[in-house]
Amino acid sequence: MVRQLPARTLRLVQVLHRHGDRSPLHNVFRGGEPCLADAEDAVWIPKLHEPQSTTDIYGALTTTGVYQMEGRGRKLRDHCRAQGWTLDGDDVDIHARSTHYVRTQRSVQALLSQFVPHAHSNLTLEILPPTSDYINAYNANADSIMQLKTHLVEAHAALATREAAMASVQTELRRLLPMFSSGSEAFSWMKAADYYICRHAHGIPFLRHTEDLAAQTIAHLTYRFHEFYSHGPILRRVAGPLVQQLVAEMQNVMDGNTTSAERVVIYSGHDVSLLAFLNAFHGAAQQCRGAPTVVEWPDYAAAVTMELYEEHSANSTPRWVVQVTLDGAALGPTSAAASFCRDLLDAVSLPSMDSFP
Image (spheres, rainbow, N blue to C red):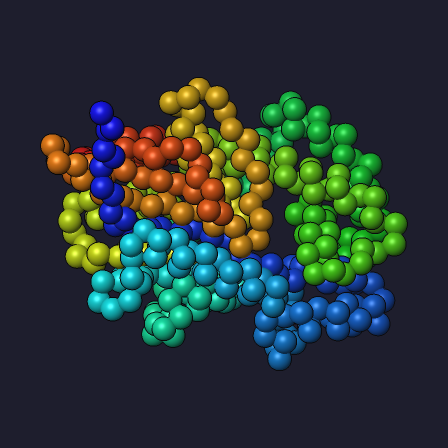
């Protein structure tokens, strides 16, 4: 006898994405020869999504980033329609939320332009102020998180050893990159890796003699990010507010507090937003399977989706399940929504809500 699988209805889609590719945060020639700094500006301006603005050249979304986000919107639309959604008319209820950075705002707008091309211009984008930003909670907790990072580097033997081993690379980067050698920018691994990643993504050559340091620099920042954002006290501060929001959205749908048949909530954030959530998610999953998962640094325009389904079968009451994906690939099997929410809250050391269906 063939066992009939329960019918499944998609009731809620939550999307947490990183913004698209951008220009570097700093002019690498800042503090060096003015003509070289001006030439660097001229390299980046034509690549910007809004090239008419020459005052905000750095840390700005590029046309490459826009194309990435438009592609993300098309894939999301195709997926939702494949689940039976129309994404049209009164049934659809879309909420878009962004950090206060222009690049995250423009990124989610590009996604929406292809996700709901007929309606995106009528949607209101909710921009979260830094003091209450749960997508990038780093904004509201920067001082305490920096203290925790400093303490972790000092107390974590493996991290301290790794830092010591990278001292010669840091010395070379300080010497070779004018923004550091001039003293205009304090050295950080984030700024150094940013120089490499942004130039590579946009086909801009590296400065002479810096090529051989690229892989080591990026690998070291990736290692640091993994150690930082899997560390419990940091994870609670960065992922905790976002996890609460994600769980509350699912709870509202399961409690019948929303009447829309097709509810979508999109959160436009940063790499730390995804890193922290993925570490919380895998921390929750580890409680079940016992094996830790090393979370990779998410690419620009990477997206996590949390899909809430209502399952129906002839002989039982409806059951709620959750499927989590990263860039369209499932991160494990579907989970019962109640246990998923509890485990996710536990992973960031937050109390579970009173009840789950």
